[in-house]
Amino acid sequence: MRYSGLRVLTEGLRGNTGWKPAWRDPDPRPEYDIVIIGGGGHGLATAFYLAQEHKLRNVAVLEKGYLGGGNIGRNTTIVRANYLLDGNSQFYSHSLKLWEKLETTLNYNVMHSQRGIINLFHSDGQRDAYARRGNAMINQGDDAILLDRDGVRRMIPYLDFDQTRFPIYGGLYHPRGGTARHDAVAWGYARGADRRGVDLIQNCEVTGIDIEGGRVTGVQTSRGAIRAKKVGIVVAGRSSQVAAMAGMRLPIESHILQAFVTEGLKPVIDNVITYGMGHFYISQSDKGGLVFGGDLDFYASYAARGNLPMAEHVVEAGMTLMPMIGKARMLRSWGGIMDMSPDGSPIIDRTHIDGLYVNCGWCYGGFKAVPGSGHCFAHLLATDKPHPAAERYRLDRFTTGRGLMDEESTGSQHNLH
Ligand SMILES: Cc1cc2nc3c(=O)[nH]c(=O)nc-3n(C[C@H](O)[C@H](O)[C@H](O)COP(=O)(O)OP(=O)(O)OC[C@H]3O[C@@H](n4cnc5c(N)ncnc54)[C@H](O)[C@@H]3O)c2cc1C
Image (cartoon, rainbow, N blue to C red; front, side, top):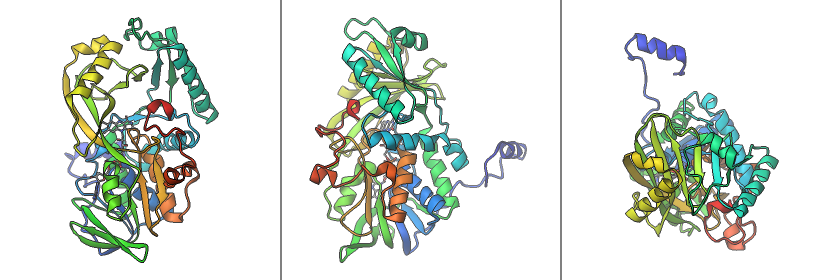
């Protein structure tokens, strides 16, 4: 069923009785060409591009819960291509271009809104770093504008510019950045993959990976064994656990990241704003809630909920930057499990086991990566060659030291990527 304005009108006139479920609910078949483990954003996008671009349709996505119940439905929805480092810069630029035509590609409203992102800076040194980043973005073919203090004030006058500790000096403006409705992205890719013949199998937990003679032959699941010629692991925060089923130890730690949303308010924040002196970022959802977040909780855990010290830290940063939010009532907070890699950049690669592929290490920035990651992982699965936009994302960089994205490998630091 194709969605259109005419369709909405027709259904409205006949009491909305003609809509069909957006995807089927099939039972697993005994064998597939390709099995994707994980029905989050990246897994669903991979399945979609396998079917759409490579015409590979004997594909299943196995999801232990329900589609979109993981981080894809838990993030703060920021989409951008403002990375600094070679490798990341190309990849996120590729992903943003896919975002810009995503709704047409999927025939689905993912509410992608290029409302612009402003990264604030608060010192001369930070301004220089942002100027360098902006130049890298422009060299990559993306957009960046360095704003001085008055430039920022014209766009977001309600900030506390003169806070004594961290006065605002200016900001790096990325007009093509913005937000999208996170779970609609999962639903759009799910519907698109299903329409092209991919089986999306929910409540199907992978419990083992079958390997014979150094080659993957299938998976064990809570709904029985499934044979497969190729298997892709795309399980975000659970990457280490699932890779361990194949005897692998990934360079990934799982950490909690929290998000917060206030009651719905009239439109007040037009863009996405990030605070340069505290890890704080905020935007306003289409429903009116102020959506914001900060840093990791900084302890490894598989609990998808956070702790109060980080909640306090994030709210303090918000109050420092824009005291007006103190009047808003917090409605909800939640956490997600982040797959943190040592250099803060992802892995899209084959493994030493024939037919077994891995896609992980998205840290706290994998939502914007969903189209690019799915596109590049599908390319790798279909052709056995890395996509040019993702060829730096090799797994062996952590054992050889060659090609580490952040040379010091000091852990994921957003200012370094
Ligand atoms: C609070 C928060 C804020 C964030 N903000 C942003 C942001 O603003 N911008 C941005 O770009 N990124 C952001 N991120 C990061 C982004 O959400 C993630 O990097 C990205 O969603 C991870 O990929 P995914 O969507 O495939 O993960 P998930 O949706 O978590 O998908 C993985 C799936 O694998 C399934 N799975 C796990 N184990 C198994 C198994 N054994 N068998 C079968 N299925 C299994 C899980 O149930 C899950 O559904 C944020 C994350 C959080 C938590």
